[in-house]
Every structure is written in structure tokens, then in C-alpha cells.
Amino acid sequence: MIYLTRRAEFSASHYYHNPDFSAEENRRIFGKCNNPHGHGHNYTVEVTVAGEVDQTTGMVLDLKDLKAVLETEVLDLVDHKFLNKEVPVFATKIPTTENIAVEIWNLLAAKLPSGRLHRIRLYETDDLFVDYYGD
Amino acid sequence: MVSLTKRYRFSASHRLHNEGLSAEENSRVFGKCNSPYGHGHNYIVEVTVRGPVDAATGMVMDLGLLDRAVEQEVLDRFDHTYLNLDVPNFEGKVPTTENLCVEIYNLLRGKIDGGQGSAQLEKVRLEETSSNSFEYSGAAEENREAAARETK
Image: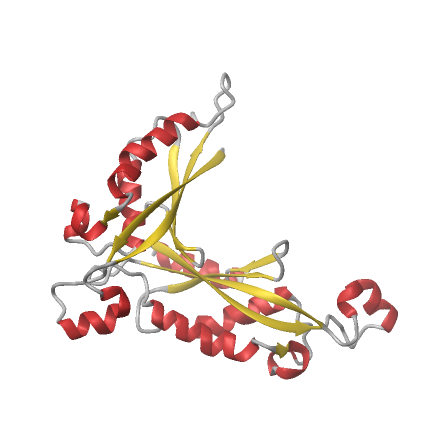
């Protein structure tokens, strides 16, 4: 088994707000992330695929295919977007780094041309990242 | 379950020296890290917590709580200190980065596990330099017990 990881970057804005909380609760829980006009990050996503090395190609999967799937399924959806307002799933779900990572997993897991999705690692900044393994 | 990792930095000095060894042995085992006045590093500590994503907040853990726990237990204690002399944690224990990594794990575990949320401390990774890093996920025995509880 080989684990292959591809990195990609996207830039997006978001804010944290739960309509079930009062304005005071939202400010207390989410702090400056509650600013309604949003704020942005340069995200880095690492997609790790697990698989066996194909005998004829020597590859776990064709990187061109992985790049294409990542672009069409994820980057086209989120890059240069205000996640709360422009990405439908985040109309009702707070676009925290945790939730974005889970969503990226959901977008990609069934679309890989070969191999099995092993991990989504999403960096919000150099000093903060989350890992999701589908469980 | 999602694992969340945050990086923090502190600077400290240390000397690798074991009183139970002769001067020659100390020099042989610890090399230039045995230099008598100590030497320093810019440490980077990565703290990983793991738990379910809270449906109301979308978060594994309140980052403010994590920041405060790391500040109080790690940064306030170790930043800009000489580990051998300024903190009690290394009395009778060589302040290698291995031992410092275990110490940080044990200090944080009590603050995070059983805290306000359901997240648990998963791992501490400590970089001494960009070339050397150490990871600790708790004692193997404890991990086996935790795994046994999860499967029940």
C-alpha cells in the first residue's frame, strides 16, 4: 500500500455564525470570526489517496486525473468565494475548518478514479490544520 | 471525528547531562549538547486534539480554550527559561526533547481531556530544529485501555 498526497491551494472568506444563538452568544463563542462581512484565508488542502501500485504504470493513480477531480469537485466550488453565501452546503452549516475538511472529503471520496481516499488535511493558516479520515 | 492541530512556539535552553554518568561518559553520550552552560532552541510544539464536530459550533474544540491551556501549561512555564534550572519538571531528568515532549503531553492532557468539550488530546509533536522532531501520543498501556473502551 502506498499513500500519495497532492496539495492544492484556494482562497476564500467565511464567518462563523449560528442563527440559533443570540448576537451576544455568537460574539462570545466565535469572537472576531463572527464579523458578518467575513474574513479570508489562503487555504491549503492535502488530499491523501491510499492504493496499490499498478504493475503497468507504477502509479497509485494518475496525478492528472487527481488534479482534474480536485479542480472540478473542490477548487471550482470554493476558490475565491464567500463560503457562507456562495457554497450551498454552508448556507446551513458553519464553514469552520473542520466542516470544510469533512465537506471536501464528501465531495471527493466517490470521485477518485482509483485508490481510496485516506485523509483530507486542511490548513487554514500555517499554524492551524485539521485532519479527517472519513470516520 | 476530526483531528485539529495548532502550532505554537517557545524558546528555551537546555543542557543534556546525567549526574549519574562520569564527565567522559556524559561527553561521549551527549556530545556538544553536554556543553556546560547549555544552549538554546526555538521549539515548535504542535498540539493535536481529536473529537466529534459540535453541531452547533462546527468546531472540535474552542480554540480560545486550547490557546489558554497551551499558554498556561506550556508557554508560560517553558518560554525563555533554562530548562535544567528554571523549571522543576526536569529535576533529576535530562531535558531532552523526548522528555520535554512527554512532559508537555502530560501537562496538557489534564487540561484538555475532561475539559468543557468532548475533544481529547491525541498527540504532541515537538520540533527542536527543522530537522529534529518528536511525537508522543500517551503511554501505550493507556492507549490500549482507551481503544478497549471505544470498542465496547
